[in-house]
Image (cartoon, rainbow, N blue to C red; front, side, top):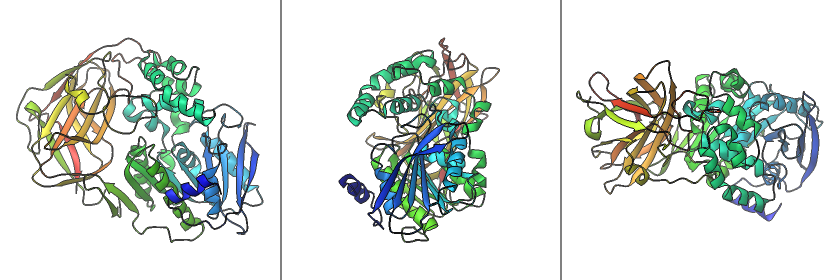
Length: 539
């Protein structure tokens, strides 16, 4: 085992290795149904007899740059097979993220069943995209699949790339850049990602967006153009990347792991809830992390290995008793629960009032608040779920203070601590001059000294045959947060959070080809007949 592997095992607080004698079979050829051949490496733990297999399917360099993770898993008692996806790291075919993972995954399973060392006991492992590849096969993997751990990801590709119906612009541009450069030597890769931030910022501003890939990575990325060409959730093109409908049928025990600022958290929590509703008993871990935090990766590795050992090797030592463990921000403490959200969480409405007020009382009759959203100068994203590496943007509420396209509502100082655990939402009575527009909602906490702490947010895209004049519902990101006595709750409303999401140009043209812009005149109502509110799950 290398020094780097020892350091990683120590940082992740992994259980002791069962063996240090691990051999590797490199570049095994795995045939796909259409004749394409993928390459795989097989890590063999020597001296332990027959052992279950852990499968990792990846479009990243897990197989070609050291294989440290695979070796650590093998040392803890498993055969490990790591497979490079189409068009990556020597595998044949062209990279087709999300849409090819089901068929290719089932072909890998068929190949596994023919291997003499395969015992018929399988677990799957992986974070982010490598978690998605698990969902792609979970419903059809058969009785061999005994356990899985889907970290930092949900089962529906559309929900990840189009959260709320708007393109996750900086995520998508950052991802195509990362994948385009990942097979370069490490110094060149890090340099390309870091120095490419300016290019990706220029690409995000490019109209139409179709050719933004040529600015970001210097070449066309077919997957980027496919995503742009299919902006609707009901487009049949996305059916091959949506495995959420099959989640309730998956019987393999699953441990889902994420962070409160993880870009994929909403989808992961939906999968957890679907499993619970189907009568499964998944585990859930959510900590104070962003998608790229090393501590999140270390925790996911440790917890996933403990989960796989418990269900494949009958070793319960690393398995905690409580199925849910979450970090409560504000309280700055971990908490064990039986279910998320906890049963005692009850909805509490906070109504928008005139003059920027926010209170539990219904509002009196008052004129709506108004603002104009201009896509040529989109409202910036200042906080929220972690962005993809490389696109720099200003953060902090000071960025919003000088803008007139953000509405702010602030409550009175809280008389006691207020704990919110669950999924907040908003019910807004709005009027827009355009049929195609976005509404963004953000909840934050304000200290007596004026410090603002982000709590939750979401954006939703609306399209209609006529101007919007109705109540709209927006589900915000899951939270576990304690508001401190004496602090105030703040709600902000805008029509963009750019470049986290692409800006709505207001014309209804497809994002792949749209270039013309129309400004939207927005109204948010708060009167007795149209009481706009946010709903907090209060424990």
